[in-house]
Length: 311
Image (cartoon, rainbow, N blue to C red):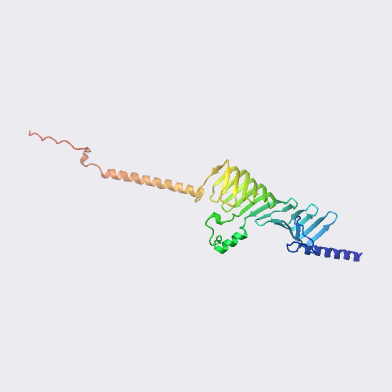
C-alpha cells in the first residue's frame, strides 16, 4: 500500500514537472516535443503547483500563475482553468495586462474563447498608449524625443497620450485586437493630470482613445472649475471634452474662495479709506478758499461805481 502511494506521488510529480516545463517554454511556433501551439487557446505559461481533474478537464493552479492569450497576459496567485470551455477564474492579486493597459481587481473571470475578461471589486485601470517602436527610434535618432523629467514637452502633441486612471466596481474588457473596449460600471472615477471625472458608467475605446461617460457626470478641472452633465466624451490622446446639457460652476484658477473673499474685503476697506481721505481733502480746500471780508463772489466784470457827490 505504501509503495503504491509512493508510486502515485512520483508519477504526479513527474507529470507536473513536465507540464511546468512545457508551459514555461519561450514563445515560439512549437510546444515542447514538437507539438504545434494552438494560438486560439489560452496558454498556461507558468504555475508553481498544479492539480488536474481528468474527469472535469479542469486545472487547479497555485503560485505565480501566468496565462497568455493573443496580446494579453493574466497574472494571479490562484486560478481554476476549464480546458473544455477555455475559461479561467483568477484570484489573489489578479491583473490583466496588454501593451497599453493594466487592469487589477479582486477577481478576474476570463473567457479566452470570446476574448473577454470580467474584473470585479476594487477595480483599477491604468492606461497610457506608447509610441510605436519605429517612431521612438526615429525621434531618438533625430534628437526630437519628448522631454525628460527635467524638460517636459511644451506642446500637448509631444505626448503620445495622457496617463488615465479609472476606478470602479466592475469592468468588462473586450480585448479583441480589432475592438479593445472596456466598459466600467458603478462608482466610476477617471483621473488625468488636469481633470477628474465621476460618472455612473464609462466606455473606454482603447483604439480610438475615447472615454464616453454617462449618468450624473461631474468634471472637475485642476484649477477648480466644475461642470455637470448627463453625458460627456473625453479624448485620452488630445486635450478636448465634449458634453451635453452642461451646468457649470466656474472658479478663477489662481485663487480659492477664501482668497477671493479676502480680496473683496480688502478692496472694500481700501475704498472706504480712499473716500474718507477725499472728503477730508475737499473740506480743507473749501476752508482755504473762503473770500476775504465776507465779500460776495464776483461773477464776470462789474460796472464802475459813480463818484460820490460832495455833501
